[in-house]
Amino acid sequence: MAFIAGAAVVSAAAPDDMDDPAAQEHRYGRCVEMAEKAPDRGINLALEWQSQGGGVPARHCEALGLFYGKEFGEAAIRLESLAEDMRLGRDMPIRDGKAFAAGPTMIADTWSQAANAWLLQGETVRAEAAIDRAIAICASDDPLYATLILDRARIAAADGDYGLALEDLKQVQLLDSGRKDILILIASAARELGAYADALVVLDDYQAIFPDDPVGYLERGNLLEAMGDIAGARAAWLKVLNLAPDGPDGEAARANIQRLDVTLNDPDVAAAG
Image 1 (spheres, rainbow, N blue to C red):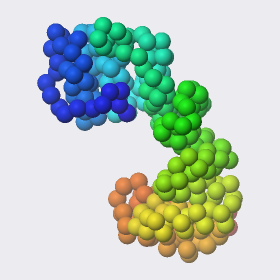
Image 2: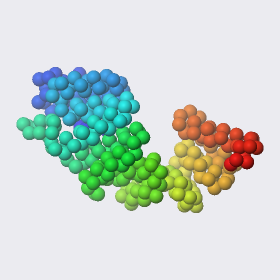
Image 3: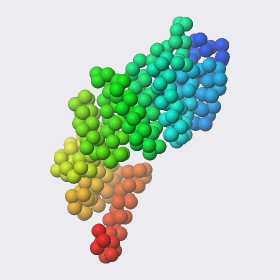
Image 4: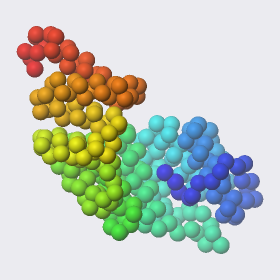
């Protein structure tokens, strides 16, 4: 998430540097870095900058501080407002006596940031609306376009629309054949749609490329369980624990194994299943 190319950490620009583009880029870089590392401090820097006329870059830094501080809804609201102001040329930095003009890519990227913030907030309807705005603005030959379609696929999956998710993921494959990392997402979407044979083929391809990725084994366990191979699912999840015992993948695998063990060891639970 960046509005201007980042820069090394430097001292904040003084108010009399407001007309110096290089100083402002340095200030933006420092603010964004602080927003990521220490969100509250980054927000304070952004608010101070806004009081000195920092405009859209300063407001974007504030939005990032809210995002990294897990205030996703507040971040999304600000990012949507920023995208609209960028479209109108309002509150933009001054370059050579003229307001800096944001191009379609920059505006689309800001809408995408808003969409991802809404997704993390659990507001999938608002996330869908924001990503649709981003895609409508972005040209299909823009390198950003494939990323936006991938974002829409993730949002669709979060909303349970695995058909749209799979359609979008396949479009990303056509747009960027080098994106082998999305094979795991395709396998997951196919599994959710009950296309187990297709999911297994794609998952095999993914694991041939990324043999030690715990996510691959986590998905293999999910797929094998859906196919009725409980022993195979358990073995796959145990592999996850061998590769990554800590973190979200390990936690998910451990929870799945515990759930299986309860089902297998409790006759009442097994009968209910």
